[in-house]
Every structure is written in C-alpha cells, then in structure tokens.
Amino acid sequence: MTNEIRTIFDRIAPVYDQLNDLLSLGQHRIWKEMTVKWSEAQVGDTALDLCCGSGDLSLRLARRVGAKGQVYGVDFSPAQLTIAKERSRSQYPAPPITWIEADVLDLPFEDSQFDAVTMGYGLRNVTDIYRSLKEIHRVLKAGAKAAILDFHRPSNPQTRTFQQWYMDHLVVPIASQMGLKKEYAYISPSLDRFPRGKEQVEIAYQVGFASATHYPIVNGMMGVLVLTKKS
Ligand SMILES: C[S@@+](CC[C@H](N)C(=O)[O-])C[C@H]1O[C@@H](n2cnc3c(N)ncnc32)[C@H](O)[C@@H]1O
Image 1 (cartoon, rainbow, N blue to C red):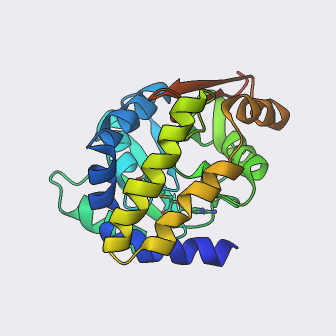
Image 2: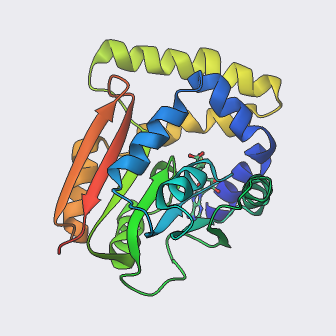
Image 3: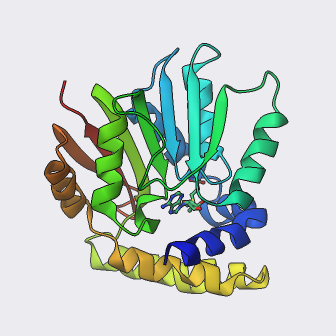
C-alpha cells in the first residue's frame, strides 16, 4: 500500500501544482495560509511541514518563520521532492528549508524538536492515522501546535452530493485529460475512508494531545485539525 501511494504521487508530481490551482480556482493558497497561521509558527521558529509534496505549504511556512527560522519539509515521493527543491532554489533569497525524503510514520527526528507542525492533504493518505498523529505529538515541543489541512466529508447531504459531483465530473475528467485518471480517481475512496472531524479529534485525544479542534472550512468540504501538545 505504501509503495502504491508513493507511486501515485510520483506520477502526479509534474502536474500537481497546476491541477491544484485549476481545481480549487487558486483557493488552496488561502486554505494553506490559514493552516500556517493556525500552527502559530512564529518568526525564528523551527517548523516542520509533513507530506510536503512539491513544497507549497513549506514555502509559506518558511516565509512565516523568516530567515532566522528553519523549516523541514518531509515527503516519501522523490519526484515531488525534486520539484520542491527546484522551486526553493529558484527563489531569492533562498528560503530556510531542508528537504527530507522519509516516511511521516517514522520521522527521522528526536523528540520535542519543533515549535510548529503543518500537514496539507497528507493525513488522508497515510496508512495509519493514529501513528501519524503519534509521530507529530512526539516531535512537537511541549505547548506547541500542529495544523492539519485536508478534504472533509460535509454532514449536509446537499453539500456532500455537490462534493461527489465535483470529484466525478470535474476532478477526474480534468485529470484524465492529463493521463492521470487512476491517480485522481483515488481521491474519492480515500475521502470515504477518512474519519470525519469529530473522529479525528477523538484519535488526537487518544494519542495524548492536550487539545484538539477540527475547524470545518469551505462549507465542511475541507477542514483544519488544530492540535496542541500539553505544556
Ligand atoms: C496530496 S499531496 C500534498 C502535498 C502538499 N502538502 C500540498 O498540500 O500541496 C500528499 C503528499 O503526501 C505524501 N505522502 C503520503 N503518505 C506519506 C508518508 N507516509 N510519508 C511521507 N509522505 C507521504 C505523498 O508523497 C504526497 O506528496
């Protein structure tokens, strides 16, 4: 399963950013900025962006922590990381980001290192959500926050119908035109399996977070899970 997921994201890498812009009408930038803000990363902080992909959220996090801070972007897809590295290399001054190829279920960091953690559209894709949150909890400093952005199944039936229509009639057909039908058809079943906000909060408390809140955005079709480690 892990290899399958990695292969999907390797194949998507060349068009990933372009498709994100198209399919969200550029709105994903706003949702990612909200995620960075809710992580409460500050100037000078050491912050971690998990499932960083081509680095969009990591670059935003790097702007937030500034030149005196440090960001680590972690992903297991070499093709996504190649694009992330090219993007950061093309910026001047170079953002303070270290790119690391690793599995977010087994992070190559000591305990309690990070002032803030972000994750964008990653939690739905990991094979073990409990373990992923446990790793985030382990590497966060006491009192620090994680903000996790992802799709969400809205409880309102009409909005859910619209979301499914959007996946079936826009996302998959547009991706199909780029030769990536199978890869984007994967989003819908991954969303069906993904726990709703309330269940995500329950898992976070089982992991040991002191507080956990799921904020629905875009009429509940997306959400940001904000977690705080005990001080
Ligand atoms: C939908 S992309 C999100 C990329 C980026 N965060 C963004 O918001 O644009 C999901 C990323 O998660 C990565 N991923 C999924 N499971 C992972 C795991 N267990 N360890 C590391 N990366 C993983 C994939 O390689 C992919 O790049």
